[in-house]
Length: 461
Image (cartoon, rainbow, N blue to C red; front, side, top):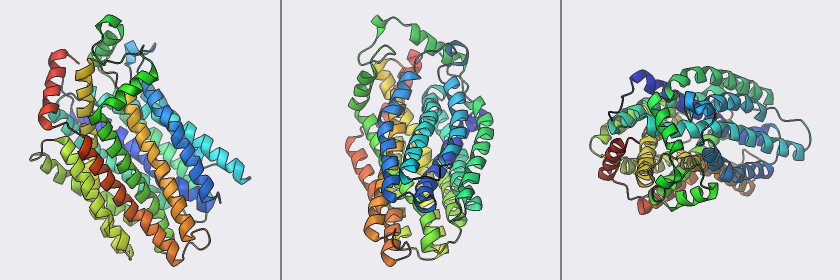
């Protein structure tokens, strides 16, 4: 069966999902902790506790959503397995984002419970669309060259989401004025709804994709291949299968360390602007990251010609990210932070471009072994790893702020050193850990990935 190629328009439309995901993830990561700690007055300990509990909730929520949404519904035969979930979840999560920034002005306990409830609801709705969005990529873009091209286009489009999530709040949020955070949330929800309209053509499932899924769903249980998971399998059995696959586990662990580092660094920049740079705008600092990421895309595409393995390139980009965190530790002026963030962005653009095709190669290997595209639980684990990173960020901020006396005097020498630690050194260490673990576990090379794609083509999977 000849695989139908997707055009540039479809790839760009698909990339809007990257825009949407990074747009909200960036705003959530950079604003929520600081908003509740310094604007609403919730203690750093309770803010961290709410985010840690939310991460525990994610331990089941994301893989479970992936498992449940992999089942056929009354809409599957017409719209496909994934599209209805993407459409409904994306709209609902945009609206739920507003709730996070409208807490009651009451006791610490009520604010804590409100934060916990709203971020859990928001995340469940976000996962509903994002897990299914990620799951579409290996099935929709089935050729190696097409995946690289689609990932490159999605990276360029998605970097605009990174920029929007980081830069846009700097035009509206004013330190010491909580109402500006609420205004920013309304703006994000409105722009998110507009972005969803441009996303839909890129995630619409083709008739071939729908037929493959419906045929798979109707297949008798006796045709199940070794290690294959089915909708009738228990959720926990599929979780067990996922954790046994070393290349998948290697990717998830690297992704977890990467997200932990990135969230910690980006969430720190508003503290940098408020306390290290005496309230100066962080617009140009985030813009430096955007410029570096865009400049880095052609560099990493060029390296792809010489290093065929997506796995090796992903590890290389993570190593570069770790090294380029360190200039942020010693930057003193506003321009120093801008230049340092540009350098960090060069590596960030590479990792961000490579992680989707690298994950697709891992999923291909699983599909070859199982004979089925039941990848919802696997993509759910990817989403969970990303959310668990918020707990790392929250705990590190709480511990560092407690030890450095941030709550007593946020402009003291020790408090400022603490901000530098969670801006640069801790992210660098996390990335080193991720690269070491990944290189020790991962065994998927370029030849194996290409062989898997050919097998899937022959099997019509």
